[in-house]
Length: 151
Figure (cartoon, one colour):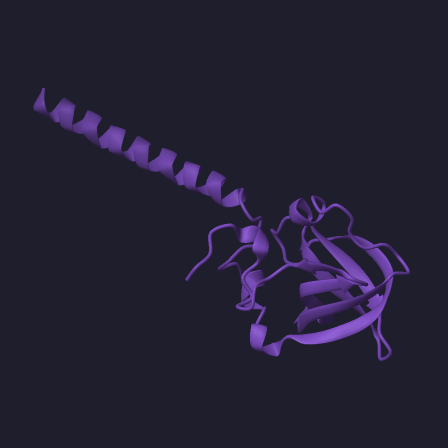
């Protein structure tokens, strides 16, 4: 009888551990979709490297910056020196803005130039269009859509 109780307790512990592991995986899949603090994508952004770029918007579309990430919004701008893609932020955040960016608009983007899949990319921290301003990251590079922030 004692052995049966021990076996049942062990089985219960194993089952509970398995359930918690599945729950943890499900929780990880939700949330920022790879766009949040501590993600591989976030680690590419060094706020000390931020520069300002100006140009005309050539196109807007969606992209997945790194494998496993949720979709994001990307714009392509033409500066005086080049055409470059700009990662603005996750689709779930950008699409909730009253009005975003349209083709042929002039924009000023503060961001960090990185290389993803051998392509130069700007990860935006601020976007200005005329007198309108959209803040995407704070001065430490923490995304505004993150909610909770590391201090």
